[in-house]
Length: 563
Image (cartoon, rainbow, N blue to C red; front, side):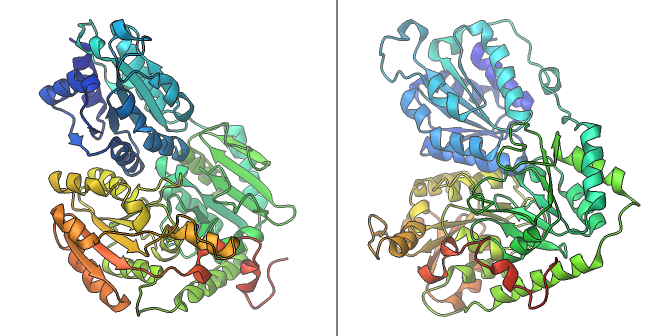
């Protein structure tokens, strides 16, 4: 078979979600072969950035890779932002780029760039194939690396002339070139972690994105129930159902004061599948109570103890670790009912604080949008946010009724909303998918409304239009004496723009109009857009609220807090 045929057949055997990209001379042989061979869905997009961000959305929802492709230097470098997002957010993704023919390499040929070096710092593995007979080994290695240990993106560059070369190779089943069972944690480490939790009177479980990626949501909830422990989520994903009575919300910027309460007074913290980085710890200001013990569980040994010293390090798969702790602790726990009672009171006080925010009127407040979304959607509806200050209102008001329905670009990748939602829909074709975006981020990838229409992906885009890069504008006004630099926008008519692409569209200018418009968009049966004329409320911005040191935790309860 040719190299291109081997690539097409291996990707089909691996079961990748799709191949997305823009055609280019460096990809023609591979694209033609993929089309002839079948077995993998091809999704043409209008910009390679969208292809990569779609693959990120798919990888988050499906927990397995999709493929983004780019031709030589211009197409390849357009993939960089999305690949970087996958690297930061630990999402499996395969990136394949073309390269100039080998006989022209290193001569400064048209569209020549060292893409292997470009991608090396933002991938787990990046290589340019030099010989056709090495393609099988390289592609198997890429697929193995993307999906083992901490998931992440990989990159393979294939010179155009090599794609046509015939090679002798077998198309293997995935279990023949990569482990398909997760790595087990050290039983001795689990013994030590169980002992910490057995002695704890005020335990807290932090559920990070790794809980969802490992399929550990049920195990996390079972352990929390056994411990009668509050659960705090990181806001990249909500990996545990927030219907759990002691679900305290998200930690970090714009997070829940109830989560801050639980963590401030915990005497043992079990952090699973999270790096405890600056976004979730409010610039590393998170400090549990004096003497509290930290148990950190992660599949990546480099993440354990990196930002906070740990009392017990558990390296291995999150699901296996949580199940191991359950085995060790069943029948041995005597939870403190007072701790659970105080956490319930803290959650109720925080929810009451959220309810007291004003609603209705004009222009529309961003939290009203999320409130309305939660009211008109079912438990399987997926919410995919773009990047902006409104994501904190999404974290506060879009209660995850089940795990795996909330997707946020923890990498800060503006423009993620629409492409991410298309990727999530390809992973969850039976679920409704809503993209929540600001006007600034939405216009970065708006051209791919055409892709959504052509590919029949009925995602709903809710665009908060405040004619500004809101998070920057808010902080400029707060920190630079009211001066605004580059943060105000002149926008097109979003409704007319969407309709030009064949998208169902409506504009909302009052809070009372939200539910009717959102229901109509969800029932449209095709790509839809709801433009919301939104208010830019600097005084309400979660970006200006301190999560940890503002006294939020202490103010939740009007009685004595734990000693």
